[in-house]
Amino acid sequence: MVGLSTGEKHFIWGGIAQDLRSDGRQRLHYRPISIETGVIPQANGSARVRIGATDVIASIKAELGKPSMHQPGKGKISIFVDCSPTAAPMFEGRGGEELSTELAVALQRCLLGGKSGAGAGIDLSSLIVTEGKICWDLYIDGLVVSSDGNLLDALGAAIKAALSNTGIPKVNVDLGPSPDDQPEVNVSDEEFLQFDTSGVPVIVTLTKVGRHYIVNATSEEESQMSSAVSVSVNRHGHICGLTKRGGAGLDPSVIMDMISVGKHVSEQLITVLDSEISAAEASATD
Image 1 (spheres, rainbow, N blue to C red):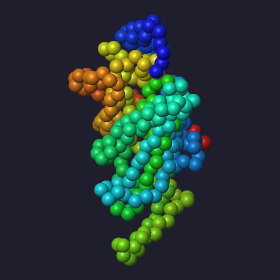
Image 2 (cartoon, one colour):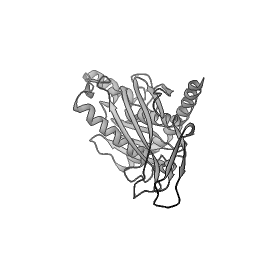
Image 3 (spheres, one colour):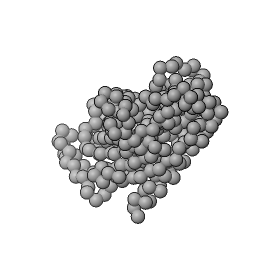
Image 4 (cartoon, one colour):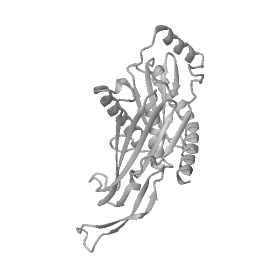
């Protein structure tokens, strides 16, 4: 938790109330966003996202696996997060482990629609090679390098950018004459299929400080929050996931308003990320 004096707390609260935050932003404005892709050569896809002083990396590893019996027509995605102890003092020991787990669960809920996969923003059926027999398992690892608030949104953006950078090897499968035969799999070293990220949502977190809520909160602003609602929205304006943190309860009408604001802000965020990802990909191929 960020230690602030009474004067600093009043300064943050007063600025937010007047729609002029400590760094000069308005309540619904983001800090500058920069993106690099292909930062981890040995991964199938990777990206580094900096939002202000928050710095995160996402990497994606694709491995062939077998679909679950309950969802034979879908591949599998696992999300893990590691909060580096050097990123913030609170990440040392149990604090970092608990936050890592909390962030991974929130990302799962926002991007994959929860454990059932219902409402997933990532199309798991696109990971199927042969229904019921072979699929791609994607392992998504997020690393928090430096933390100055808004980690969930930054990790969501990094995953979206890493997926756009992901090449999945083309697979030829020989099923054999009998249905019981073990399929023969030939994985190409030269041909890769680009992952379709058109349906991957962005995550917008509305942080409530006093009677107002803000986006892209800094660590100091987060230390003054009563609660926060994170909503994942795709480019069609559809809600893909929702998660809340903070002990204070929220009136349903406030939550609905926060979702509405989140949808509006997501349009701007998607435009910025599309532009930054395209620029990063173009730079990587030069």
